[in-house]
Length: 408
Image (cartoon, rainbow, N blue to C red; front, side, top):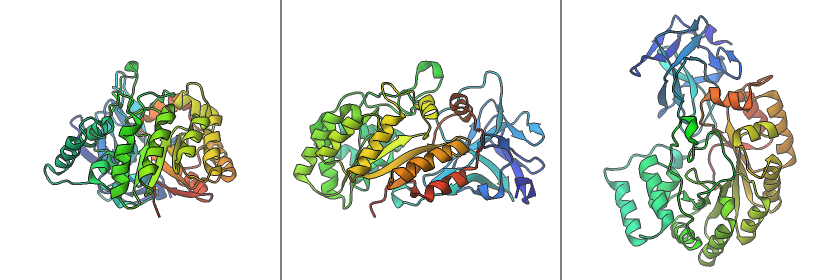
């Protein structure tokens, strides 16, 4: 059933001041790799905590063409939802670059905002947090006063305060999965890197990357503190505020050994691009128990266009995944999803072939934060987009699909 057949459909757009209004006389278009109307089963009422975003210099596309004097509207979804469509818009000359957010198509139905998304997971640990005034600051200051020279704590304190990072905050809240940033360097130059953007992109990095190579002792101290206090706790090397942790596999292996000398509790995890199988093996030998490997595609050309890898390729990533599965780790894939790419017929076939041959425990869908127009320019538009819901169901037929790591 097409969108125009649904009652109460309206274009949702913004004026120059960011004020949102609905126009029921106009049918909005979405971008699914091809510009088209949204389908009824692609739309849900906007969940709580969506973030509405004005797209400056971009006119919303509709069935009657671009709408002048209006700005396209998008939303950023809360954790636990997967995007199905991106907004369709006409970019004006001299439009500013879009910051690194996950732009999701939005419209109105029956005078209520709707979004193109599906719910794919649930976790209390990732619901919006509200602290009493000064509560988080007191926890951070108290912990820092006890370990004033720990570079890991300094970084996660910054991420807790400025970026609201849940895994950073968990270090001080003593709950769930705790961050262990370790590497200031990377061997990829991702177009949508959130911690290091090249000046010519015109896009600011939304996070500050850790600047120093923290010592194994500092990493172990934070991890031991967390695992001794949190039942079923997780500590994770590899965060959004750093480069590639496998470039520091020696320090990580030493830290893991020190952790396990003190505590057998919880899970030690690594978030990685999987670029160096030998370095991953070193960490596994030291006691690594789980790994999440990120990729945007199971096709080498699409992978390389986005990641711009330095000295490795997608085959190395695949080797790391196979190694971790063979060694008995809990293996998840962080799949950076984007409508029109993830659901391209060729991509769905490539994903199915790999996942059937290499049985990972879970695929965690992640909305790729990037200007949709830039991403399509980088990796190309699809030949035959099947729809994101169909792509996700194809993955679900092989393995578990979600958005969070679950200990049970």
